[in-house]
Image (cartoon, rainbow, N blue to C red; front, side, top):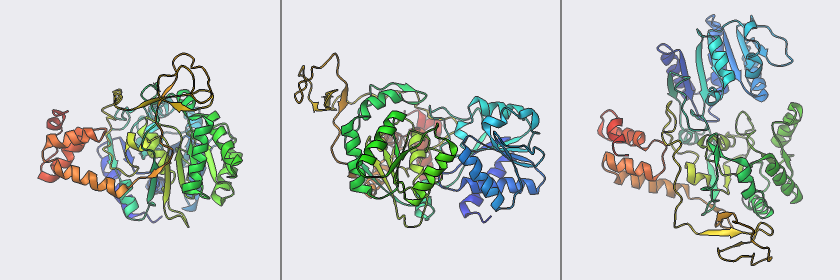
Length: 469
C-alpha cells in the first residue's frame, strides 16, 4: 500500500511515541485515510510477528476494514456476531460488542488498534483494554475528546497529530467547501444538555415544524438542487418528517437509523452513491463510519453543542469524488458560530475542553420573539393571543430568536482576512489570550502561548498565558 506523505509522517510519529508509551492516540481529519493507516500498521506488525486486533463499533467499519486488508493480501480473522472465529490468525478485525463477550477465547495481541477512539471511554472498550494489559494500544480519531468535552488522558498516554483539514484541502486530498448560514441562530440558551449536547426532544420541539422543514427543502433546491445530501436532524421522528417533506417536494429521499437492518442500510447507501436517492435523513448514524465520497451537501437542521458532532458530520462530505468540485454546507442553525468554520485550526489536548461545564451567558441585546404553537406565526412579546390565527397563548410561550428567511453564503476568505488582521494586531501574549477568548476558542491560553512562541522563537509559556484568563 502506497501511503501519502502525511500518512507516512504520522506513522513515524506514532512509532516513535510507542517507544516511550504503551498507549498513543493518532489524530487525523475525517477523509485523511485512517483505514489505510490501520491496514499498514497491522500488516507491518504481522510481518514482524506481532499479532493485532482492530476494534470497531459499527458493522460498516468492520466490513470496510476487512475488504481493505484482503486487497492488501493480509490474511485475517473476523470477530463478529454470527461469524466463526479463527482466533489464532495473528490479524483480527473485531466488533467491540462481540469481542467483549469472547475475551476468554481470544489470545492477548501485541497491538490493539481502536477506531473512532473518542469512544474509548465506554465500558466495552475499557474491558478489552483491561483484559490485555500487556498490549500496546493505538487509537485513531479525527476529534480527540469525548462529546461531553472531557479528555482522553485516562486512556492514552500520548497524542500525535497529523495534518489539518485546511492543509488537506490545500493539497487536494479533501475537497473545498462553501457554507450557507443564517444571520440569527435558533435560540439555545434555554435548552438543557445531556451528555454534552442539547436534549434532542427539546430541539425537536423547536425544529420539527412544517414552516422550518419547508424552508429546509426550499434552500436545498436553491443551493444544492440535484446533489446528494445528508441531513442531520434532532430525533428519529424529526428525520422521518423531513424525509417525507423532501419526497412530497419531488426530491428522492430516504431515512436511515440504528434500527435499519444492515442489508437495507447498505442498499440505501448504494442508492445514494448511484444518485437514485438524493437526500438521506438521519440523527447521528452518518456522523461516523460512513464512507460515501459522493456526498455533495450536508444540511444541519439540529443545533449541536458538541464540536465533535459538528466536525464529524461535516467530515462526511469532504472526501473527493468524480464530478464533485466542492462540498455545500447548509447550516440553518448557525453551528458555525458555535464551533467555527469546518477547516479552522483546532487546539486539541488529551485533557479535553478546558471550558466544559461553563454555560455561555445569553446576549441581552438579542431581540426575542414568540411563536404560535398552532400556526407557527412569529410576533413580538405582548399579545395574549396570536395576531395571525387568534389562538390563545397558553402559559409561557416558547421564546426563540429571529431566524432570517434566507441562507446566505459566508465569505470564507473575508472571514480569514479578518482573522489574520486581528491576530496581527494582537501584539502581546495578553492581547492574544483576549483574542482567543473573543473567538470562543476551546483553549485560548494554549493557542495564545503557541502563537506567541512561534513569533518569539521561545518555548510556549502556558502558565503565563493562563494568568491572563
